[in-house]
Length: 435
Ligand SMILES: Cc1cc2nc3c(=O)[nH]c(=O)nc-3n(C[C@H](O)[C@H](O)[C@H](O)COP(=O)(O)OP(=O)(O)OC[C@H]3O[C@@H](n4cnc5c(N)ncnc54)[C@H](O)[C@@H]3O)c2cc1C
Picture 1: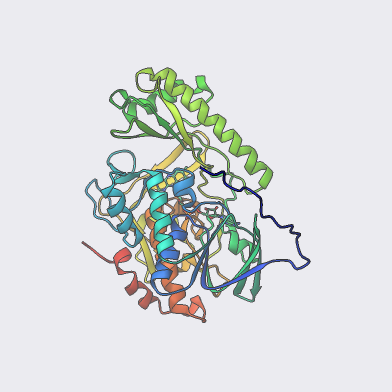
Picture 2 (picture 1 turned 90 degrees about the horizontal axis):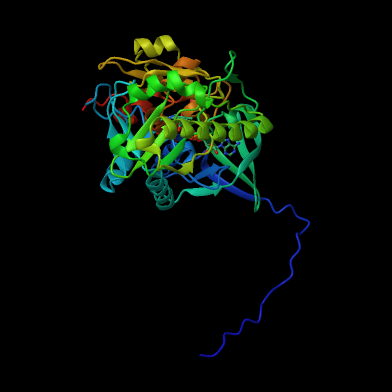
């Protein structure tokens, strides 16, 4: 066979004087491709809008995929046979991952509800294919560095990417950043916890676990309390969820600070990994039958629960959550407990009974001073306890759908003036459906 001719065809290039900034325009720009932003982007695309979905990570899926959160909570009504109460993209995820054997239903634990464990690789491919086939314009590895605004209207977001700068202008914006990054950058008011940190978690996935020997949760909790200190563990509760038939266990047993200051955030990310390693030492030494041969399959990116969130037109309060207040502008519902991670050593759980549901009002998604920005996911307005009960992924999916419909109804007008009855009718499946 003749040798191939490798004579190189090259050319010399140099950066030109022009900035090279690329301008993209869309109807709706979603900042943040976590579960809430993905839901918003897919719903908006289905409504016929040109959508840009941007994220600073080089991958879609936010924490659901990249921090390996691992279970969908708040998707079902309470009780261990509760009906599904959020639909939209949840239907496709449950159907398609279920068909692949990539889901496992968990019952039990402190929440009084069903929780769905998922394979994060299968979820990442589901999201990628859903976004690709919906013709959403995806902008990955794009860190927001500036916002142009005009009174209450955001006009454009400036992004830096490794391949150059991109400016995205749009009629409406969704702040799905988890940290209210868009609302903050636009100069609108935000909230932070005034009483010390709300802790995140370094998730870790172990493989090679002997499922048959895996301890029950009450036994593990008791052992954590008594022996955890011997391994340097500060948090003395948490979970090890086994995915049956795979020898895989998802470990959520650390409490890590997640500050918004960049050097401190990076330092705590490394501290979180070290904490996770201490947990593994504990598991291997205390439960050798289950964990002696276990290896780390993956460490998630830092798991961040609550940092900074919007100051909305309305704040969801813990009293509303406990009372199950049915707001006229409700856009999401869940039965998930109050789950507060405000202590280094443990978690405060306040579960609700089988008939309880609480609701998220549209007002808590709208930054007080904004006309065309809607926040979704873990950075909507609630007091810390209320937010802890609605930032799980079921209601995050519902909030994303609500943002898409609200921006659709607002058009070039203000989201403050939309017909909330019309919005609620469109969101029937996630708010009022009873089957
Ligand atoms: C450790 C842990 C365990 C949890 N366990 C569960 C559970 O078992 N089940 C459950 O349902 N929920 C759980 N939760 C809660 C739930 O996972 C999160 O609240 C939810 O995933 C948040 O989704 P989101 O879309 O709001 O935000 P995220 O998933 O955080 O997505 C935000 C995205 O915005 C991007 N972004 C942020 N700032 C910028 C910027 N400046 N420029 C560009 N992009 C930016 C980020 O890169 C990120 O991808 C857990 C949370 C944590 C931290």
